[in-house]
Amino acid sequence: MNKLYYVYDPMCSWCWGFKPTWEKIEQALSGDIEIVYLLGGLAPDSDQPMPIAMQKQIAAYWHKIETLLGTEFNHEFWTLNTPRRATYPACRAILAARAQQAEILMLNAIQKAYYLQARNPSDNPVLIDLADTLGLDKTKFSTDLQHDTTQEALLAEIQFARSIGGNSFPSLFVQTATGITPIPIDYQNAGTCIEQIKQANTN
Image 1: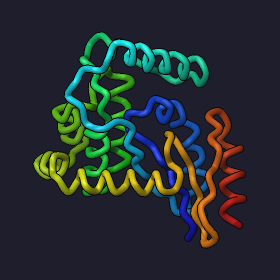
Image 2 (image 1 turned 30 degrees about the horizontal axis):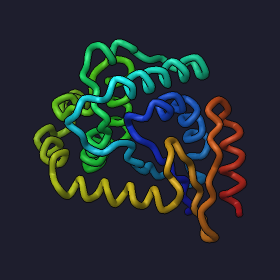
Image 3 (image 1 turned 180 degrees about the vertical axis):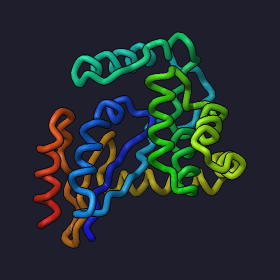
């Protein structure tokens, strides 16, 4: 079966904005094509507080997405936390949850914690608490989250995402026997994406 790659980062605000459209796409195509989630890895690990200029820039993106797509954001995040430019911890949490067949559950939990509850998914204790709330094996999750093999798996997945052209998030690609076709993202119209994916899937 051909594959539809969805390249994303759990802390990418445009992926959060795209979520309702993506869910429609996924629902419409399930069964017609294998859907594969790929972590794109937005920002490597960092212990440094995010520079104020970058905080303002990302906060402005949130307002832009809110205005354009009607996506809900809790803007208190910026005053309640010390943001860091680090999405790899959240990406590793996705892999640790994937090991327990809970990738999508964890993705949803991270996005809600970050964008609606003003919690910081760059912090391991937040991620471990989310896993516990989801009913995952907390000890296994915590070990996997911080294990070298999980970091190696993340870097390999990021490298693959880059190799097919997944340099921005979200990105969509259809893989068939004849090659890989990038699908333009239409944030407001699932139908446009669905038609293009179907067309690429029959080539």
